[in-house]
Length: 255
Length: 259
Ligand SMILES: Nc1ncnc2c1ncn2[C@@H]1O[C@H](COP(=O)(O)OP(=O)(O)OP(=O)(O)O)[C@@H](O)[C@H]1O
Ligand SMILES: [Mg+2]
Image (cartoon, rainbow over all chains, first blue to last red; front, side, top):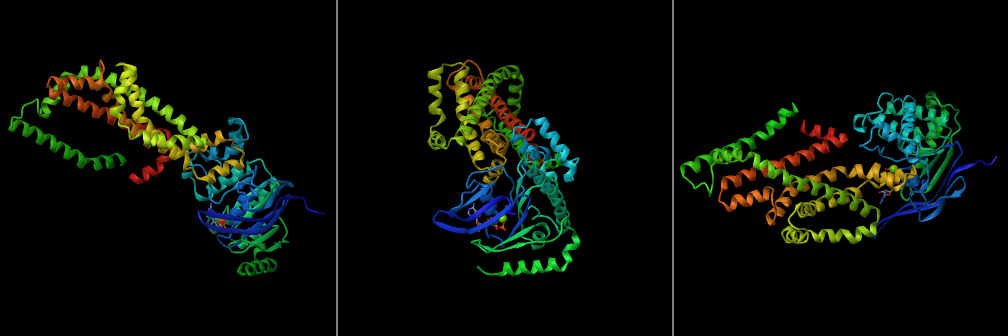
């Protein structure tokens, strides 16, 4: 069976220019996310991972290459997607509830109804009782969960998550991973997930794409055949370790 | 605790001011300076007490011009700043002109206002608007343009339209800029109204000052200066309070800094 592709990047190249200086960031990167698939991207810092997500969302027009969502060419046209940028970008002037309700309000839902839906979802994200808190009153983990909740409320079955757990300590991070998997399974979405952590990439994904140092190029694409639902015991299995070794080797290849 | 800290930090200034007043009193008594040159603080206090009701009446006239002018400036500055942010060609055309217009001294413009609009309330309102508009507009334009482009990207992935982005992201982000502009505007506004009154009016603190000056009642002049200072200070504090009340998310960082 040919998998139905949700998102496709075809030979995408991108350059940032500030004045005279040109900084090539991506060099003919291709990747795809099938419907309902969880795909991770790993690569060294500055290799263009965040840039890939921006291009995938249509926020950035690549120099060459094309982006398809549901087989239609959306290159450079911002799309309705569950994009979660690297910084959580909660608005400090809005309470948790108001921040999370933004996607609903943008979709012209009535305010009352939007807030009611947010309140309903708070327990799923472990945020009940904090609806009227401002971001500065929340812990780092709560802020990221709020941002994730906002992302989930975007009415799109494609999620683009940029190191959503980057700022968390190891323990909170592990909890959030399990918790993201539960949500992902529950809402049946396709996910493109950027991370620095090899363990996290293997643990979460159906497939891991390794990107080289800047300018980012495809280095390796590894299918992860571990049973779902994923359990923490997997981390110590031989299969997991061999995946890990493969990815470490791929990451250490110099471009 | 916070209150005590703020009293403590203002204490040196208060003591210094007190010493100056005492010294002033002593000098004007010992040296017997004529009251029309330098009235003693006690004489000023007496003038203030004697003319209290009259001063209040004049203050009300000035305050009417100040508040209407400020309101008009806020309204026009908001509309223009939002328009300039939305339509870049408008900003490119208008912004430099705005900056250049600031080199025209208000003393040159004020007489024109009187020639065009007479000696009623309107020219004063317009003068206040003119002096307050610039700091407000410039701060707002700056604020609106300094929003993190990533935040706008994020809103675009939610398919929020331009007005929603303006209202829920850009304007709240620009609010601290707006309030720092408003603080400057509030201090200019009293000055603007008084200049307007000097050039021609029937009532107002400016007129009171002129009359006191022309009749060499210097203690009355000083009394009105004190009223002007109090008025400016009150406006300034009011703006601070409005900023505090309308930006609850800004309180925490401030508390931390003071605490
Ligand atoms: N708006 C921009 N203008 C100019 N250069 C940029 C811009 N955004 C990113 N870059 C540069 O492009 C390169 C890739 O950036 P990108 O954010 O995509 O990397 P990344 O892989 O996400 O890195 P990290 O893992 O540290 O988040 C970096 O060298 C960065 O300095
Ligand atoms: Mg990044």
